[in-house]
Image (cartoon, rainbow, N blue to C red; front, side, top):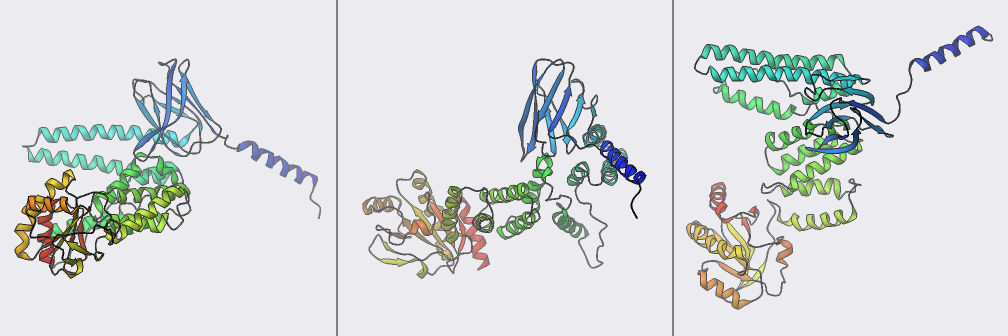
Length: 476
């Protein structure tokens, strides 16, 4: 049966109506900011990224209005408008990027109106709510401080504080429930900390407070980042994202390489398929490990370097960077904590030959130095007097490597500081390649080896050695 002409006309009319009723979102961005008090001054549009603020656009304020335009849309995130007097205000930007902001410089958030962007307007309402709640919290805390001696009053005020905090949590839950699928909801969710369910305490537990504290820590550690969607790259342009990562890696995780490496990989793998987030997390965790001052954390750096950079997954890295990293990993790997120290056979100042692995001692201090080094001139005598002398009767030995090739300079230094109790050795022809095996980039360089000649510690200052040696002797 052929369709009637009337039916065909109806279908065409409905299609035309649909096109008119749902116009496509305009390309690029066009944001008008009305600040009637300002004129002939620059307004800056910026965004948050990795604990910093970056400028994305600048517009001249003419007749109280600045217009920001761009052919390409802005990446979703929290943006800030920076005023000439140093004040600024935040605006959440997502898909709707043709909108108008109007406000008064005397009360930026309180007097602000946003038209044309629903999510920006929702976030503005959230800002006003939080501003009100923060004012309440400050008043309650001030009252608590003023009534410290009145226990009943403090308890009453504490309940008010708890109720205020609950109202914020309820607001967050309602915002997520009423706005599913929006970046605004993702933003709110990402800021939320995990809420621990009621804890069942076994009857046999004697120290209830300690048990509760441990369980609270474990829950917080295991669930702290569960509200973060690591596939949502818009979160990169928020101030809280990196703050939460820092809290997780610096305060919630035990600072040992294996723990840090596993946590880093778990998070990175959640971002697979999102180019910018994947890149950021690889760089963030690698830098976190690489810049750590905690001894042994270079093992985490090596693990992340090999898994992501040197495996070819970090396609953004330059060949020069990769080659330098490859060399650095090669140099560091033999000196990682737990590795067996590379054996060396060297000549002593008396002409005898000593091998590092033949030394029988519960603890061996391996030190590389040169007499002309300013730090060595003070550190080496201190190492002898304040570490070796007190611990020699406990079997601690020192394998002291003179890193240069001038026997006269070396012997003069030994005599001047009476370093006769040590095993003093050198390698004038660099046959042992000790600089490569022990990553000697500066002196003095100190390693602590256990009874099996495994590296137990490295790059310690002389002042740190006694405590660590005591710890190591108790373990053996």
